[in-house]
Length: 216
Length: 84
Image (cartoon, rainbow over all chains, first blue to last red; front, top):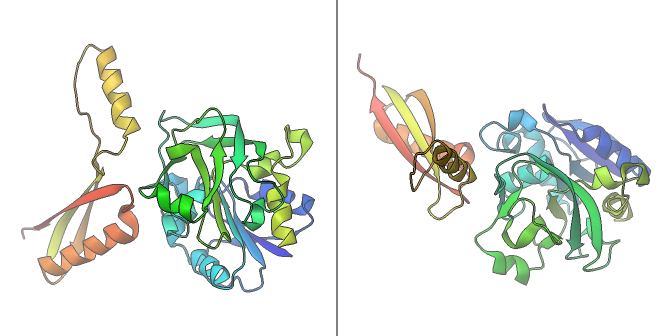
C-alpha cells in the first residue's frame, strides 16, 4: 500500500505521519506540492503544519497548488485521502469536505490532549474503531473551529467523523472536529492521530487511522 | 487602462468574530466602552485591464477562487481608474 505524504513549504507533521504510516505497516512516500501526477499512489495523507505561513487563511494557498489536481484524481479513482489539522483546513478550502475550519472561539493557538467520540465507522480511517468509541488524541491549532451552515445535511449523510467529548476547546459547531465527504473516502480531522500513534507519545489511539488506510 | 483595486473582506453577518470581541474586551480594559466591534481585511493591488467592467469581473473571480472563502466571507470590490 503506497501512501503519499503531501508536503508544502511550512508542513511540519510530515515526518510524524510518515512514521505512523510505517508503524501501521504501510509504504509511505513523500510528495512535493508541485507534483501533479499521483497515479502511483494508493492513498494520500495531507499532514499538519503552517503551509505558506497560513497567509490569507490557513490552507487557502495550498488549496490552489498543482498537487491538489493529483488529490482530485485520487478521489476520482476512489482512493482514500486524509487531511490532518492544516491538511483538514486545506481539504475544506478546496471544498472536498463541507464547511470550514476557522479562528478558534478563544483566538489563540491551542495545544492540548482531547477526548473524542468516533461518530462514524464508514470511512477507511475509522473502520477499525467502533461507533461512539472514545479515543484520546491531541489538538494543536489556532484555526480549528468548525463552521457549517447545513449541519442537518451532515447528520443525514453520516458525514460527522469526530466530535469533542466533554470540553469543546475551539468552539466548533456541535463540537464537530472531523468530517468526511459523501463517500466517506475523503476525511478531514483537526486532532492529530499521528501524535497518538505510539504509547511512548502518551496514546496509541490514533494508530487505527493509519491501519485503516492500509487495510482499505 | 490601469486600475487601483481594493477588496474588503468581512465575515458574514452573524458569524462569530473572535478577533473583534478580543479587541473590544481589550479596549474595555483601557476604559473605552465600545460596541459592535468588527474587523475587515483589505487587499490592495493595481490591475491592467481594458475596461472597468472586465477588471471587476476578474477581481470577482479572484475573490471566489482565492481571496475569500464564500462559506464565511462577504466581500466588496472598489475599482478606481488611475489618473495619468
